[in-house]
Image (cartoon, one colour):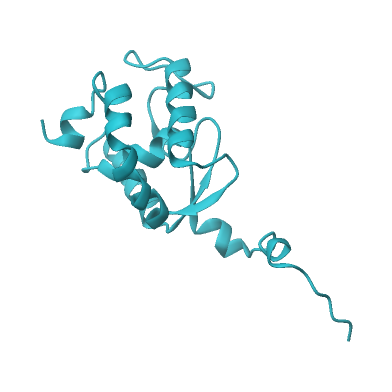
Length: 142
């Protein structure tokens, strides 16, 4: 029998199908905004999808549309076509969120890591993005 030694970093590359299925794929701003999810959204299907996303302990950070966007009625041709937000605005939010959190696309994190950082960055996030957001009242009960 041959023995193969691999480093810890190399071992992280090997994961089972269950590991991949038990994590959500989310874009930058959803990593912050989903911490304030209160069961409201565009439709029952959209809301149910978010609950499913939140049950997964791990999150793979992606660029562009993610599992939440997949059920959004405003996702058209892989871009946000909302009357409230432009796709460019969403991409700016994603970039800022990842910068504040210290994460990069492709990274795998868990909700505990995210939740530990959010209180430290929340005021800056709110000042820049929450004022004009349609979910502001839902998130912060105002």
